[in-house]
Length: 239
Figure 1 (cartoon, one colour):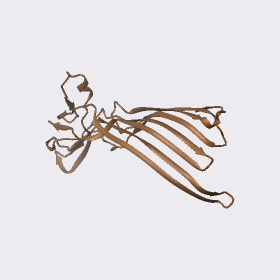
Figure 2 (cartoon, one colour):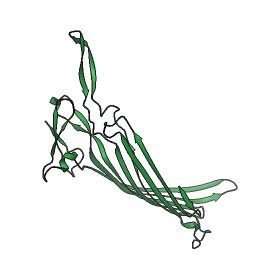
Figure 3 (cartoon, rainbow, N blue to C red):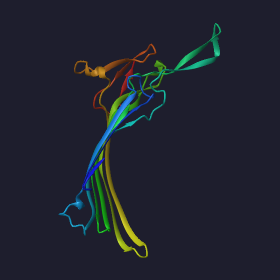
């Protein structure tokens, strides 16, 4: 981070993380963020007898999520201890693997202002937009496939809105440490999610083709039908 004359602020970060929860091809995730700030109350044209604080700020950055089952990307088996075949134990498949499972990433955009007037009135205003990419969802499978769901990165979720927080100190007695403050908050958030792609294979198919096949390492080829722009729940799965 960097500060010039306590007026102009700049900070940034870069991080990389790896998780065994994801497929062998996508273990690593790369995340960054950057922010700027301007302490306007430090400028000569601002009356510091009125403004105790007046700050304009903005930030943008990526965060990652690995909120999923630890073995969602791996094929898992269960030994059948009560049955043997020529003195050997058998095993049954408990989970389908997905080598392409990747980090769920969220890009946050935020612009805000902080203001404090004569230590009585304060205002914090934020307007934001966040886009969650590679959203992890459980796609429904036909029961005859042997599994009811499989985890995939097929969606995008967008949140946008604003947040206003204000407070006003009606009574203030510093010597007796007596205060009476009124607070008010106003928030609005819009959220919507959609299927933005089925798989990379779709992008290489002719226009109007929305189906794709994926081999999950179990000897079974699953057919999924996804339509760009539809809600996350509107995914048809067949075989």
